[in-house]
Amino acid sequence: MPFTIIREDITKLKVDAIVNAANTGLKMGGGVCGAIFKAAGPAELQAACDKIGPIKTGQAVITPGFGLPVKFVIHTAGPVYRQDEKEESERLLRAAYTNSMKLALENDCQSVAFPLISSGIYGYPKDEALRVASTAIQDFIADHDLDVKLVVWGRAAFSAGRELFGAVKSYISEHYVKEHRGKHRDLLDVEKKELSVRSFPSQIGAEPCHESVSSAGMAAPFDLDTRLDESFASMLLRMIDSKGMTDVEVYKRANLDRKLFSKIRSNENYMPSKRTAIALALALELTLEETDKFLKQAGFALSHAVKFDVIVEYFIISGSYDIFKINEILFEYDQPLLGA
Image (spheres, rainbow, N blue to C red):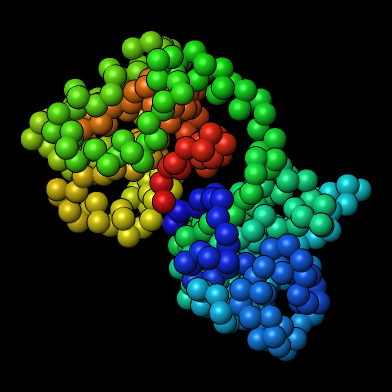
């Protein structure tokens, strides 16, 4: 199931459960904790918490959502950050995420949203808190079906990737079509027009952007052997078999929902959005040339006129297919995320 990083008000999300970054006493606090209590109904939520508290650091417990648009609130206590006990702090923070997700599944939740636990008054450095959250969530959903959202405010949490961000920024500066800067069409606006241009791939944006880059050092191109009479879904399934991969491996690497992938498999005429097609290309670890053929079968092409496409292109030519890392960079540039 997918994992996405978002900027939203966690108290307004329509998920099965939201996670409260609680104190061990399960008392109403400030920040996100206070906002959750106020939205749920302070008296009702506090009464429910008093029946099950206190808890230990890293432990998770559950209450009804009361006035919130969710079934449950999962309360977990993250650690207070201590530099001299860094390993223990990380262990406890990871446990807070893992135990919360286990509890969500035990209560038949299909979706859950987290704040960035311990990154407020508990002093956990935001970049480290994001790294622990991301790895804990990714490790868990690799073996479990759960849609997870991580609510992050601001860009301070992304400072750990400064070197990568700098490399991507340089690549954008070199390859993003100059005349489109300052009037960039958001990918979501582009996708509104996709149905009208899918039958005419040559009308979409600029020429395929691999023409100005080299894929030297990457694996030899996989022979897609695309055919005009073959549907996108048929081609995808054929490629999965040829790559020796499983459906589960592909949809999880693509950060796609299992139900969406089942729809693709069962519908011969299924046509993906551009983002879904790109996510699948990344999951299959296609080269730039292979990606061009793959997208063309769905009626799309990468374009240097679209910043989202240029960012994706950078990761493909770098041979870096970690969709969660790509999404972190896309998030920084206020671009739509892949998968989900």
